Length: 134
Image 1 (spheres, rainbow, N blue to C red):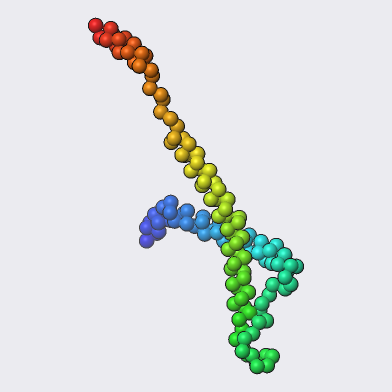
Image 2: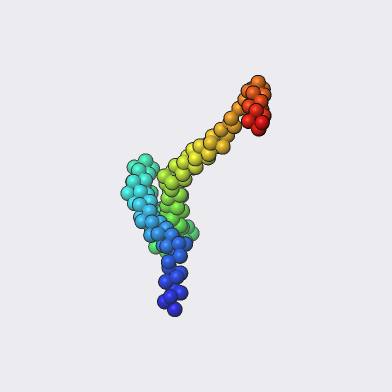
């Protein structure tokens, strides 16, 4: 049992997945801090308090137990902000790097083949080769 588990863990994919999960968790904390500590206070200064948790629908009186849509709106706003932050900090730079890499590879692939020598050089080469054969 342990031998099979050790073989499973030692495979590259499992180790890469574990590293990815750990780095993803750490990066998630960074993004959440960016949203909570940087972006949300900026939104709060511009638009007022960015907390929709007190929004209630179909409540006839305060504290009557209407439908709380405020938490949902806050979660949606956080999702949009986190998505935008990830797009700006990860996706845009990665796309730029991929584009530069593709341009570099295309430039290397498009290097012109050496030009064919002029006709007189070809004839002289053929004469030289013929003389060597004798």
